[in-house]
Image (cartoon, rainbow, N blue to C red; front, top):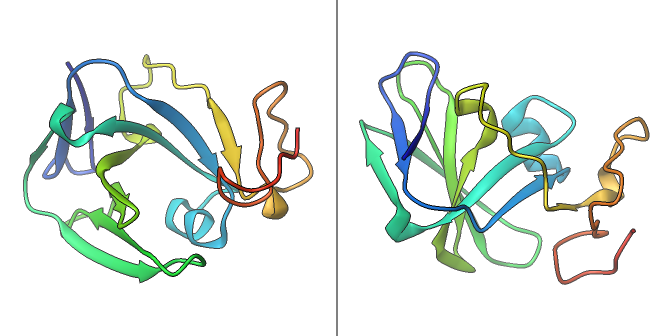
Length: 137
């Protein structure tokens, strides 16, 4: 079992088993949510995830007409996990909230149209927008 937690520890996520994917997303919303050049999330099936503590929810519309729900700690405001209405059974967990010893290299990048030039992913598959869009590498 692996655990990710917010800055104060009041909100945690425990995951069992292997992740489905790790995705680096440079869309404007993920950049703003993470405060960095991209958001990095490890994705698990909902049945692999246990939520501990109270979370607040912020739901926003997506470019494709769906919605995206972010869950954050009401005490320290750490954005810990999320899911989209396109697939509510897939939970993304902020990679930076796991212990530093965990390694989560990206399996793909999305929204490369917004990627900062200095960010390099090497041979990791990239997509112009979402995973169904044109490949960038």
